[in-house]
Image (cartoon, rainbow, N blue to C red; front, side, top):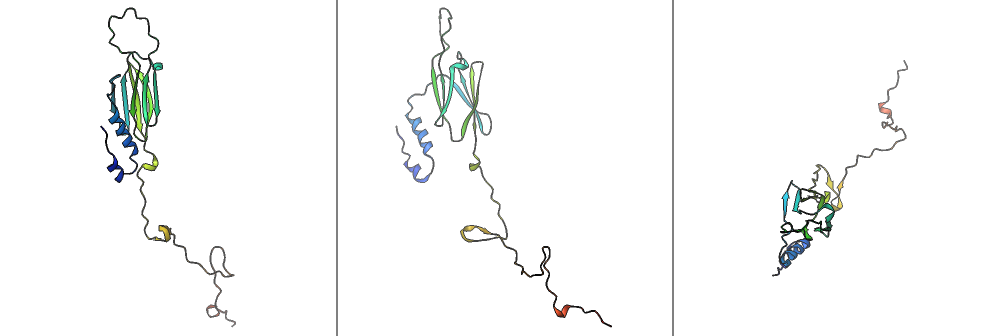
Length: 182
């Protein structure tokens, strides 16, 4: 069964990865059931993948993130001499499980306890994708190309009597007070 994603590509931009994931899911012929696992949402941006891997040591497990895919594989080490096995119910066969990771999702750690492998995953939104508030300034006019023009202070006339702190103007003869000679 194939899906036609052409209508999606006519109206959406940047969803190539979604189409690849959907195509891969449609092509998969039977999902392996070993080892069993749980996926839990542990926070607003964090997840935990827990796999039941009884009989495996931490050195037998390999985690690899490549091309937005988490690959968990287990290889059985040399079998221990357990005597004559009358019934084998604990599967110790090699396995490989693949999990598609969304954009900006990273594996942050893994630990093993009581036959359970717990892989911590977190979605990290880059600063460029976070909402950014743009302040609106009042009283400014826009120049060409939408760039705000900064008002310039009025220019003062340069006179030879100007000092650095205040601007002095020469006194006019009408405003001069003349001392009385009398």
